[in-house]
Image (cartoon, rainbow, N blue to C red):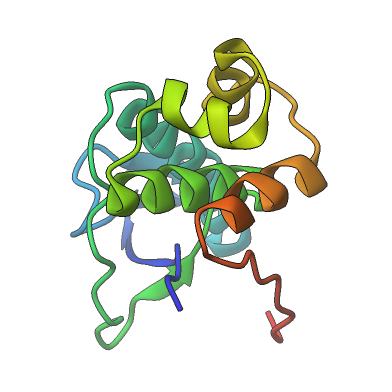
Length: 143
């Protein structure tokens, strides 16, 4: 199963709080007033980094395992679902037009499903992933 969870490092900032960075997503740099705030900001920043990768048609890096002192963070659930569709399409070698044809919809709808800033419905994203022979899985873990 593909996971969209990345290790982040919290470094104490001189002015207080923490600076957050990610080895696998070097574009992710943010900060927070305390550990909880820094991790919340990391998830928000990761949402924007994922958006840049998807809008640029780039492959998302494979997540590394957390090292000692790092924390695992993931973007919001809708972003993960859209990233899963992005990955499934790339692996299948399908264009937006080809997926639209398989779904029986206009290509604009597929563009919206892949647009990280458009509020798509989760069942529709899951349906598109299913057409590609994959299954969207949602889990629950202790925070």
